[in-house]
Image 1 (cartoon, helix red, strand yellow):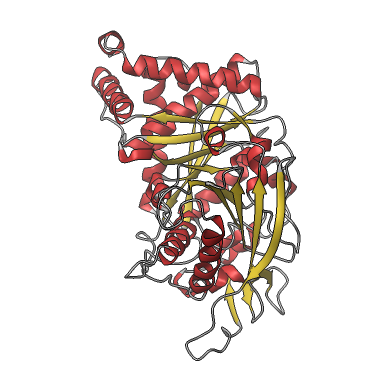
Image 2: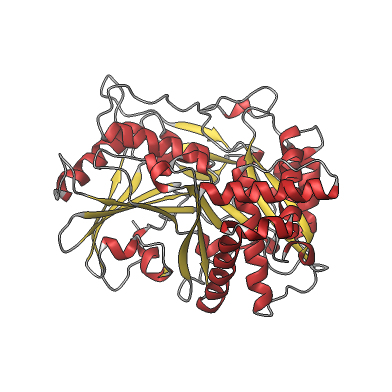
Length: 469
């Protein structure tokens, strides 16, 4: 089985296969095949999602006892895979088909579970919000083994005191979306912690998705232009930094956007906390590129932004909340850069307006929604570079993933270093803020940090409110 990437200070101790636990009668879980829907097939050529959870092993009953932690993690993973069995399987072409895929599980399949040690840096240095070399964090998440594997796990004990743990989880997006993968993580954590009442099991029924054969055919073609949206080999020179917008910052954005609406005599856009977050980070992203003369030619001076919305409650028929698979659709926002980049409330108003409009279009989920998505996709295939995008959501509650040894000290989506996306999670501590992860080369990171610092200072000021509104 393929070993995960190694850093200079990481020593891989073992890689074993964790199989789903047996049925009540002691027999192995039987062979099963789960077809991919068109919503799954969209992600066949995408890089997997890589998360790492950092924990301090300080509380009872696992204080400093990393071996007990590892044993409990493996045992609970086996039990949870019994109900999340597609994640223990592998992707393959559906027998007798040329462009249809399925997840196939058979007895003997399982999830690669790697145990490693890291003695090059302490947990405190790894979990800071300040810029860190992505190349030092990337080895804490495993590669997916060859052969169509969908899930891999790596538990790295942080030396010398063995009081820190980095739990890396890699998931192929074709297997499930963020809601499903974090449902799996919360279920695994609850089982590991010995929860008295297990979480609701997943719904493994792909017939709940009404198929779009034309969309499936389009997404399973080999289109080279998709590859330019990802940079899997460009981790070495990137820094990963965490930026937090407080509840007050978010409220200030909403207030200022409402002020522009009133001044222009327009109805205010639906400026939720996530819309406000997307707007200010997108604005900083555009501004940081412009400061470095990194204007993207060939796209008419427009900025493009893509993010996902959950369609479970909007599909006809309605898809269950715990559906295991992909049930998300894209939201496409676009506007001239010159209308978003300026400092002050007007740029934020434009960004919030086009983002809110993109959400409204997706939420209506009209019959021609997927046709428009295909048209948007064709349009983006003609631009140079990749559109700015999003990984994660505050709704996933990643800071509640407690395996019985405490809440995570920090959670990172490492794969943003390959996709160029911004990662998003709820703010730590339940303060109502939103946390964003950005991976950029050093010079551009410094420009982004200056832009973000200026934006927060402006949002926090009392004088700019009357001046700009």
